Length: 147
Image (cartoon, rainbow, N blue to C red; front, side, top):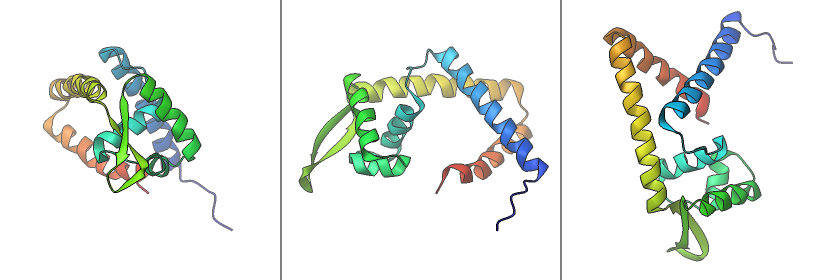
């Protein structure tokens, strides 16, 4: 039977990370007039930005959700003209999903505004050493989100 005890530092890290990520997310949404996507929609758009066009099943696997749930997410994004569908050149029966030009422009503008605010805040409120510590911490935190 696995040991279910959790070190106090793990519990504090989990609580603080969750609270701070939530606050930062809300702050960035307020500052930039966020595009008002659900977290799941944002994750799909991020996948398309990072990896390019993908099939519905590939996106579902990447986000660890059922293809049917992904299809509903994609329908909502398509209604907002954020994505477009096209035939897969290697298999005409399959569709690839990609960002539309409209979607890409909106996301890039929003992302730029958020990153600019964050960069200015880091520059103004953090020392070089503190910024390096944040960078090092994110290298560790990336393990939480990678399979």
